[in-house]
Image (cartoon, rainbow, N blue to C red; front, side, top):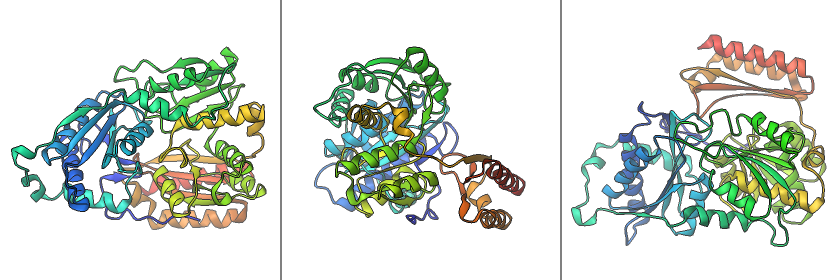
Length: 459
């Protein structure tokens, strides 16, 4: 079951906020200032606050974060809003602080798993949820409205900026509180790759304070090295250290730490689909899985759906993007879901994906069952799946070309019920994603290559 969303009116916002190369439109200081101004104006207009709007702002470790934080803060204050600066903090930490401080919105400055040259801005509402498409479209319209730039509040109503004291410590406590109070991590060895990103302080503290022996990688950010040869995109680095350290678990985070790839004690990757199955199975056994159902995206493996079905768990599918998963969770009154990429959302504990929290919940299952992750992951069999990214300057237009759509339909007919074919424009990179899965690996490799060549020639 797929959640329908419309992005026709959105040009700047993709599946996860606004993202691009710093210094080139749209990722400029001027755009950030305009976004801060538009968001504050919208909050005043919609909520009719009897006070200044309150907006939390946090960032990851990339070089351009300070510049964009300053620009978006100036936009907020120029419209009479107050800014609360969290500094470097994981994306889920910003969502948490936005809700716990009773702020009206939160802004995260991060490009997630992208290299340091890129950056992005994504927005949470006052409850810590990412904005729906319709609100993002309204913000874009306001940013383009010349009248807003001329609507300047008088000097006495200009906003102010305040630091949030011990933002990292507050986030660490909130994540630790999701771990069962009767458990600790004594006796466990964990290799933790922080990707030189936003969790380089918080994630080691969480696992160490719960008693684990932690070997930390990627915890020396310099503004340039975020995601560089480390993190969730390079799990083999963490895997090698797991084997060398004879660790029980490897945790590879991305730059803003809203997702994680886990590795078992033999250094084998355990992806988001496998972890989703384990967590759903565990929650159902404890009678804690709402409606005995979860939400994933159209990218999740058919093997997940089949394994869940055997356990009496229903799978709802959303469009790609953890915010669409969160929307579907709320729409269907569910409390757990996620993405194959490692974004896992435990709505009983958090409003967005959180890599550190997901690793803790997995560790809780390992402690409860007394089984290693490798044995637990063997409960689900994934179908072979091929994912190809085809570069194109206009992914949305390319994916809609008649030649491309005809080839997609042809391959779907050839696979029938023995697999799936999915073609979609990326919302974060200038590529079209081609995904083919099925029982016969040779066949799906051929079909994926055939469709990818069609997309490439159609550019």
